[in-house]
Length: 251
Image 1: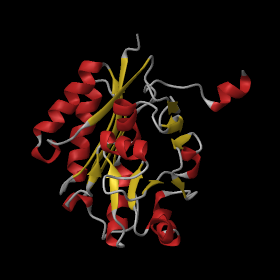
Image 2: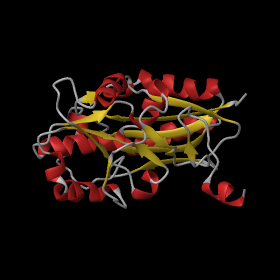
Image 3: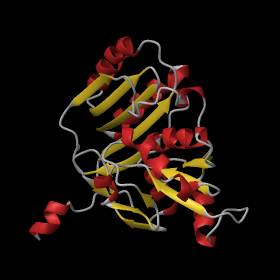
Image 4: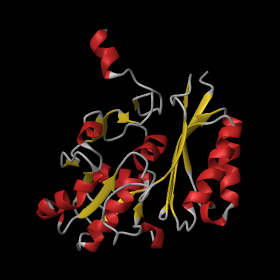
């Protein structure tokens, strides 16, 4: 049985002292023997960590003692080995770069759609009011190529900073419809939904992202795997590592 616990988590919350917090979290994570990446910014925290289950969960529990991080939710998956080479704790201008300072999820989340609700909409072909549902993949093109929701909008962006301009170019595809943005864990689709709502689009984020969908709905309405930013490369709908494209080519 796989023994390494991998977690991904983010939370948009105001952090006035990210540099001071960086040193504290680096020491705490290193003492726990964890590897991965923690990003801090004035707008919140984004982390990908791996290690023994007790160590990882203990680190998160201690983090949640801080009222700023009490709502932090983590998505778990397992592997045979640690998929990170080292521990990095960095301070950034944004925990996910969009270059749109007016988009401030730390001041309030975008409306979210639970996986069960989206599953119902997709199964029936419309939302509960009978409106057309449009899924928008907010990830980079190479990530989308690993897998995505059937029929989702894919704007072939190369980086998330291109999303607002791409949304403007595809506004006619979205207007008057119920739009659900999605990404790996939820961080990009949260900013994307807020931006779209600022532009007058009825947009929502998929709560928990793709990994949350896999956890609750498996592979329903999904084609392929999900790229992850660690040594596993991609996960299947059971949240297990899948063979890399290199391994498949060599087979």
